[in-house]
Image (cartoon, rainbow, N blue to C red):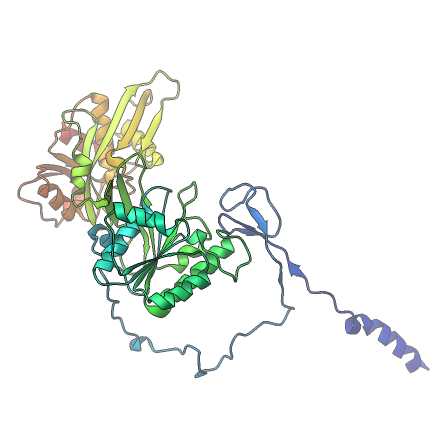
Length: 482
């Protein structure tokens, strides 16, 4: 009798676990169309990039039940089609062969040329000259006997031909394709079999595998994956042109920069003729290399002597102007650091900075007041790096302090002096790397005197034509200038 009553009760208790199967929950996400940031709820402003109304609802993805996971392949050794682990000693270290483009400034930034099978990303503001630079590079490769495929999703073949005629670009080995569908591009790629390919731009490409609009995060990721597969499978070097946001970063998901082998930025104002090409990522060479170009009627002309560009219009015998030697990648550059100090009629004096970090300038002004006894709290201070360059290394600190003191005291610094070195909060002059290379470049350009941190001169061979003064503090540097 007890068993008869217990059996229905047991079935009733266990029935929900046996018969009730809850529906699988779907993950609801919103993705930013500008940077790819994902969030489980909609927000008016993206926390990743700060854009307004850029979050878009994406298709929900089913979540696997707890305790279950998908396995793409059996975890066994020797299965056909799977990569097998190899010994570290068996890995070869032969560097890949490079193909020089024939443009020394571009080859410098790339580390000596393009590597077959590499994927490169070039970003820059609209109108800065990205398409012009790559069209000229394509022509140089075609003249050298390479087959080049130029894919454009923004311009027609007639527009590209008009630009090519202006740039004197014409070759039977340079092929044009105006297409945005990645499947059509891959089909033409198999027909042409190029050694190098340019895709202008990646934001205009569309892949049938991604249902969203061209330029969206999923489309950019899918199209970049197709181009990477074409490059790696065939040994063709692929250049991707990328748009930039208002903050100067390449538009699209950050994974795009991780997928490519090199990331280049083409900088410069359209009102100025000079352009700068920087490498912020390079798997086959050094980063922070700098290439200088000049926009002319015949396209991008390389600047072989940057000092002529940066110092040709320098004012002589004027206070507040000091030459420093900066290192951009492996290249020493002599730059004119300018400062203007004037009495301020305002309760809060102005601090206007162009070409160097404003926070760094505020630190150096405080050091000059505290350690050198200069009165700057009631003075407007304006700092400018001539030529449109942006200095990021601290070796320009000593030149900035000397320029500010020169303008404040209205005492001009001799044209034969070069000043470089880092400044600490205690007013000490700290050593900087590559001092011997800096001094050799200064001597080559005719400078006869230099001020450098004493710590940087240990074991350094000073050129015979130069007199170098080693200093330990900002006070000593100002005293050496006189």
